[in-house]
Amino acid sequence: MAIIKCPECGHQTSDKAPVCPSCGVEIAGKIIRCPYCGEIYFKSEVVCPHCHKAAEYNQENNTQQSQDDNGGNRPDNTAGAVSLPVRTTDATMPETTNGNNNGNGNDGNGKKSNKGTLIASVLIALMVLGACLYFYKNAENDKEQEEYEYAMRSSDPTILQTYLNNFKDAPEEHIDSITAHLEKIYKQDQDWTNALVSGSKAALTDYIETHPDSPHRQEALDKIDSIDWEQAAKLNTAESYQMYVDAHSGGAHYEEAMIALKKIKSSEVSSDERLKISGIFHNFFVCINSKDESNLTTDVNEYINFLGKQNATKSDVVSFMHKLYKADVESMVWSIPGSYDIRKKEIGDGLYEYDTTFMAEQEIRKTDGTGPVNVFRINAKVDPDGKITELSMTKIVE
Image (cartoon, rainbow, N blue to C red; front, side, top):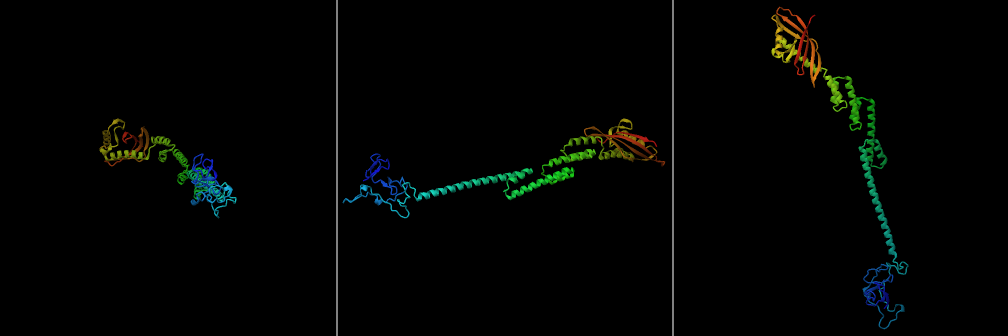
């Protein structure tokens, strides 16, 4: 029998006691002495709570080894001690006397454990560092891609050059694209300078066609608009103003051009208008030549100031024709050898009245074979509907 400390409460008791007299925990047959550090602990524990090593416990040697009944000799310092299994030292287990086991559990396995922990820590640190580098690299790539797309959309050479300066390690295709874009902008700026210096419409038009997406496009269009307006104002004709209006419906001088065009149209007789007026009087005198009553008054107003008679009617015009054909007149030919002097006057919004003067010759064939020729100055007016409203004739005496 030996006196031990209760593994539960530390109270001194006999290793043969059924239970600890202090805490009541079972003692006899429930404890074991650690073969490495000598600590007493419960058999139910897997390892020694002091040195954390497992004892190789032999169940067959678990019983108390007592002295034989013949009173065998034992050393005094082991009298009554519990016989515990002793672990045999071999090549795989360090001796307790070799200095590697000093009661602290720091044997060779402990050193290997510390070394393994250090290696694991280094590996974890490397993994963390690798992850940080990975995310940093991704962030850099994302930033480069964003700056690249922004630069490609820009027409500012400073922005493109900044990209090239900041991302020297960018993908080669990105650097090539930015460089080409930058060169295009430089050439575009040079072409714009040349177009401005020339000051010609042709150069500006060519610039727009060559660089349709240029930031100077609107400025070039404005300059072309100004050039066309200067040309129209210099000519100061209906045709020149009409050309400007047709080419620049939203031009800066569109309203000015329309006012000038309207003013000119109110006084300038166009070729179409001349043709219309000459046709009216040509038809009138042809009908007199052929004595065509039905068509004579086609271009005559219902009421006309005719040969000094106010509010004359179409019947008065027909009567005049018959008076020209006296009994001795066999035939008659009226002709208009010269041009028409036509003056235009606006009498309403887009409505014009025409005053015209022209010379007419009357060649008469009489029954006696004579044929005098008379010359008359004709003064007449035509309303916006193309009807003759006034007509007077003055004979020119040679």
